[in-house]
Length: 272
Image (tube, rainbow, N blue to C red; front, side):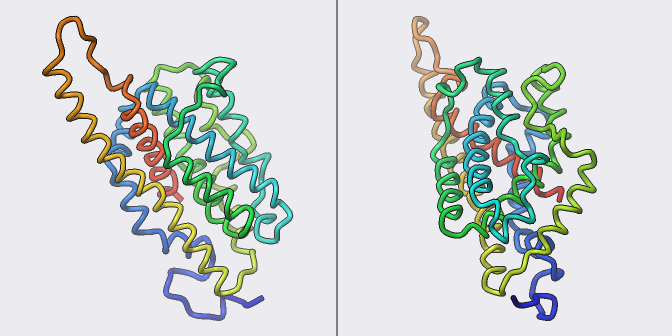
């Protein structure tokens, strides 16, 4: 394999982790400046929003972790395969059961943007497993970086006790997030990649961000349409007509779910 350290590059540093950070810098900034992400940091999140977030995260991690498991022996996946330390599926199942009850699987609702993301994960898992590195790095290290802060914000905003409903943000298999992230980067940087394959991983990392930014663009449109529709309905409603609240609007549930998902991604990965 080619040694990338001996060749000049236009991105910062020669390590893959540094190159991903440099390649996605603009996307980082765009993601962190979304209004919904800023609102999340202020603690402006409802239980409806959070439940929709959990549904989307479950679908995303189900696809990601099934593809990682299936490709665990792939030379690009094996170095960054840490199921005991990082796997999120079981914790998400606990959270979903807390909010939806034992039959939570029948109540999962996700927007089209989530399906597009999971379809991409399935596609590369089948055809280009090496690209899973970009998604695993973006998701796991993002959630590990922002997990404690987001967990506390969610707990306070929703009035939750203990870890009930926020297991997703807890990594009991990781005693020191900072040391583990150093280990993870080191293992990822050890992956041998040709120039072409490395560029594909960088492009895929940017693509992962773009999925979320595209969702945000759709969210803005959906919010605008929903607010206008709600305003018109409110002005024309009679005393016998129950107004359609935000929490009951499927369109707004779509928008809020994907928006808060974007907030989680933006806040987490920017803390790498």
